[in-house]
Image 1 (cartoon, rainbow, N blue to C red):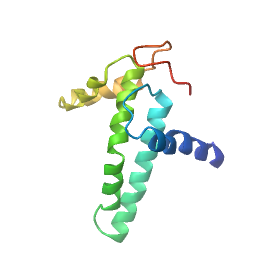
Image 2: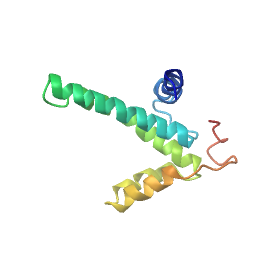
Image 3: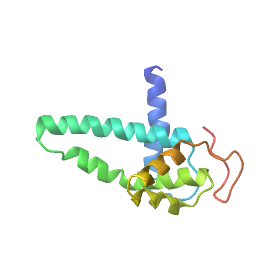
Image 4: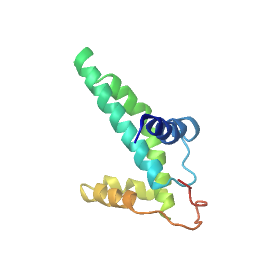
Length: 125
């Protein structure tokens, strides 16, 4: 994977989600869209936490970034569940201690429905 591909993925799966789907609970999100967004959020948070440690000694920048991406994370998770044909209310299963997060992780890893469902047409990768 070269730097141009990484920049393309970053723009398509991270910047585009923040610009156009920041609070969009409607529609569907395929696996690459969900997991690449998660990957870029993780990497940026890790880098900001490292900078925080060097400069401030506490997590200020990473906290601000995490709060700024909280809503898009929830929206993307709900759209990912929509891709599986499940209602967005399933997202709150993570509140069940331990097992809820595992169930949600397994659901996020499953392939989406290849046909139209109640939430729209399948998203092309």
